[in-house]
Length: 86
Image (cartoon, rainbow, N blue to C red):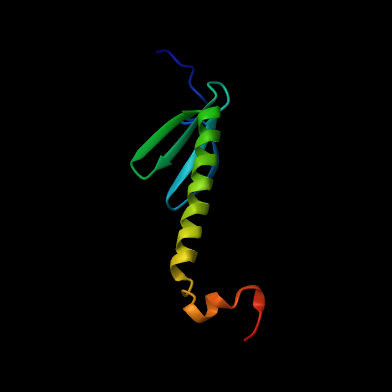
């Protein structure tokens, strides 16, 4: 497959930190996600879908962590629903 080259090898730098960087090539409409020695290339719409999936997964991880870190209600506390005091 023949592709046009961007100004840089991966395209325009969009974001990054010590763990990796995100690049976008407007000419080919490709988003490149570089993590250390690995680069994943996505069509722009597939990258958007990946972000949605990752955001949902992160929210689930936080929900699971909160559920595991929340102290379990005792039997007595469960019988006092609605804030009623006995």
